[in-house]
Amino acid sequence: MAMKLEGSCRCGAVRFAVDSHTPYPYQRCYCSICRKQDGGGGYAINVMGDSETLEVEGREAIGIYRVEISDNGSSHFSSAERNFCMKCGTALWLYDPNWPQLVYPFASAIDTDLPVPPSHVHLMLDFAASWVEVQDGPGDQLFPRYPKQSIEDWHKSRGLWID
Image: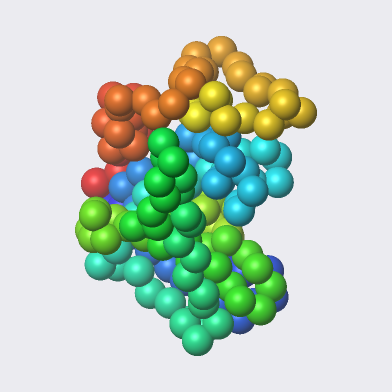
């Protein structure tokens, strides 16, 4: 049975719950979007949940931000929707209509005790701020951009997938 994750914003205006088969907060993203929007330590950590199970209280306090991305002289808005509390600014979850079955709550917004991952994946290191010291440990993997292994595959390959 999937693990039920409960989360909230800092001020309490938003509460949410979602079922997750992949609750280990192992992936640290250092891209400028995650770092500036969600990551006080120089990175942000997402977990993955089943969007059909997402329950939200306080939806009226939620804002959605879509980042503008500039590539090779042109720009476009990301399809990813970063949901946040408009009252206190807490980053809550990311949703992308390209993967409608999934939602990615920020580990920092989860109130449920999350399991400790056996190792971490540090990704988007090409975009890490100069002041960030990557604190990698035994078994950690470092990637300049995105790794090929999905969140689901990472959990399954380590026997951490929760049915």
